[in-house]
View 1: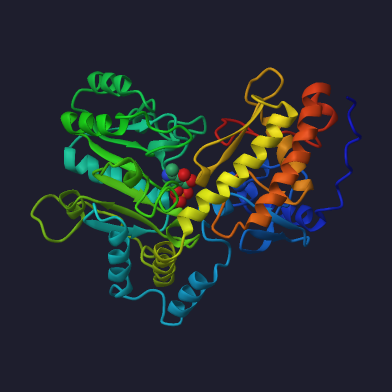
View 2 (view 1 turned 180 degrees about the vertical axis):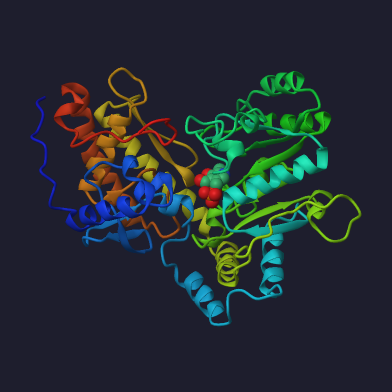
Length: 445
Ligand SMILES: Cc1ncc(COP(=O)(O)O)c(C=O)c1O
């Protein structure tokens, strides 16, 4: 097979290109979330989005795409989802921030705890990172211990020093802080046992996602909980991704485990800035007014309970509880996986390209001819999907992905994978237009 000439794509994104230069002059990184950055996408990609509706977005050049992942997995119901936008807009008319709490803070707390009946209390905030960091602070105050144990197979817990200090981008994080975070592997109870033994009575908390791409082995989460109890450490499940996706009651409900604390965000308000720390009363109340223990300064910020974000959260939870949102996420994911798997089989692409994860949270994996994970091949697949109107850093679906959107994506993937196969045979240089994407966690540009 011979390579086809590369496209000369310079004309598809002129407005994005112009705006990109300005953005990088004004904003370090050109944007406010690393995962949205230019280095995460092919050079010829929509640089800036003008608007979204359902699972469709339009860039500043007027190009239309079917999007996956959508707001870093936050927009689970779809962009500009009517009932959520209407609830937020109506609340805005009443004012968004006062000197005393708004009544909607209590309503939203009630609604969330109805979804999560095993938890007693909730504290809302704006970002997932603030919620996970607050969970660690509570655990440290409760146990009078300093160290925290994080799951090394889960890629992100917070933009704060306690986590970023463990990555390659740890500039600016003092060694003293890095020394306080230790790591363990998912599905490896013996490893965690050894970690507790290496740091006796020093670990305040164990934090992990209930699951990521890998499902928990039978008994793993229960064993982990038992181990934490025995060692006196607080168990924190980070449900930022799994919450309102695996199940309305979170992955903890699916796996039958109640952690001491857990954190939610992203899908909680369909992309509006709302996250939550929930948990056991005796722990959570350390941040309250009705105890005589030492006080914990827990999640107190100016914008923490912005009323329209809470209204968006209430409306989002209502949609989840009254419509088949979760079932639809799984059904659309099943359809997409089956269709793409068919192309992978027909083209003989396994194991270089695969689709993995729960149907409600699919990702694709790209390897080169040597079988090693490859950023260049990831870039090629992104490039070929973009050329066919699909903006898909993952295959994470939303409630508004219709079957026609899924089928269009399967067709595009079939065509993109033909190019992928040709590149495996002929060499990727013939097909890749521009530089490959780069890992987020890297020390230098
Ligand atoms: C599992 C997990 N925890 C925490 C966070 C941090 O959330 P945020 O970016 O809202 O601070 C993320 C964000 O991607 C996440 O995926």
